[in-house]
Image (cartoon, rainbow, N blue to C red; front, side):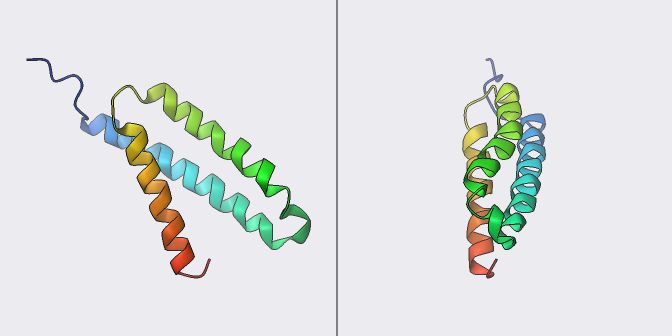
Length: 86
């Protein structure tokens, strides 16, 4: 029986590390919206800067569900920030 398709601890660690890197980059760039001139530019800057760790994560994601878990973690951060007034 081959269990190579199941998520292991190494895969979950990769999800956590890349999610944290993505979170830090997007949060730091989101603080730039406090400066009015950067607010319209964030529609271009955030996807480019946030896409770099995501594309690096895609090179490591070999098993089903890893991208879904990262998406759930990222969305939970958005809901937390919205509910706490950020």
